Length: 56
Image 1 (cartoon, rainbow, N blue to C red):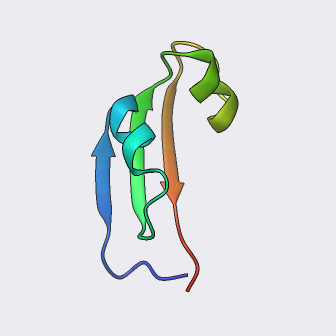
Image 2 (image 1 turned 120 degrees about the horizontal axis):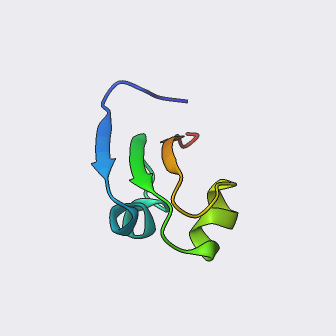
C-alpha cells in the first residue's frame, strides 16, 4: 500500500466518481442514498470518513 501522495475528496458525488481510482483518497461525505449507504455500511444521513487505498 502506498500513502505518499494523498487526495481528499468531499461529497457523495466525488465518492461515486472517484471510488474506483487507483490512488489513495480520503472521502468525506454524508450518506444520501441507500445504495451508497450499503456500500460504505452507513445509514442515511450519517457522516462518513472513508480511506480508499489501492495495492501495487
